[in-house]
Image (cartoon, rainbow, N blue to C red):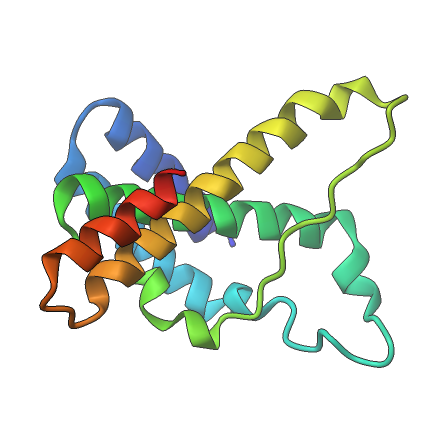
Length: 153
């Protein structure tokens, strides 16, 4: 777990210093750590008759938020630097739900992080659909343009 945290910190520091190649190398290391720790299968027993207690723990939700954040980082790498899919290459193997959100109006300290997560989640799914459109073998450029425009609506 320490290697994962170190790789994430190095990746973020490299991004802030505009060292995109080193950041990409660290991101690939992060993906290896995630797969080694099976964090991409945190909800493999969901849905089931009985909910596992670890699925409801705060730590599991932190892992879920972190994984979805890493997916967004990869999508930006793919969009801006034309990097290949690594973590999102095998989404069918993933078993990670979105985290539970706190909707208690009395807990105002959760409002901004919750809204930020909702916006980032929407952006993540839009970018996943965007790359899905281009992964299909479509000869008709008008249908591709129409599909992308639908995402903007």
